[in-house]
Amino acid sequence: MKTDRLVAQTRLQSPVGPLTLAATDEGLAFLLFDEPVHYHTDLEVPVDADNPFIAAAARQLEGYWRGECPARFDVPLDLQGTAFQRAVWQALLGVRPGETSTYGAIARQVGAPHASRAAGAAIGRNPVAIIVPCHRIVGSNGSLTGFAGGLQRKELLLQHEGALLV
Image (cartoon, rainbow, N blue to C red):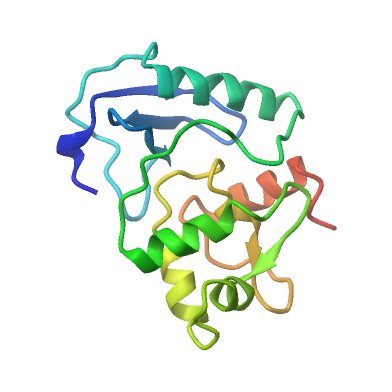
């Protein structure tokens, strides 16, 4: 996504480390961990925690950390990517807290049954972590694989949601 569409950003502290949230006029565009793999967190956009999309996301995340895991966050999103990426990200929104899915299942869901690696690449480029729950996607054998925020964060998020059997 081009960052020239961004109108506001803020930083939040969370149990999994600092998060950067950024919004456009259309919705939340980024929720990134520190040092993300595919996106910069050094954004040249005004800090504005009162932006309506950022404020809504912050309120919903506060509830999430208190254990109020909604079936789906309802903050408007402005997800910019290819048609395939957006289809994959939309499919992620259907994976509920406490559940996991696989890269292959997501690929099948978006009509590309032989494209689990492409689905994995799209999942890895998810610009709105936690809210678009890429952390709920595991390997076909149930193993924790690939997560732009690091496998330790992925494990913590899944444990928080009660999805990870240890």
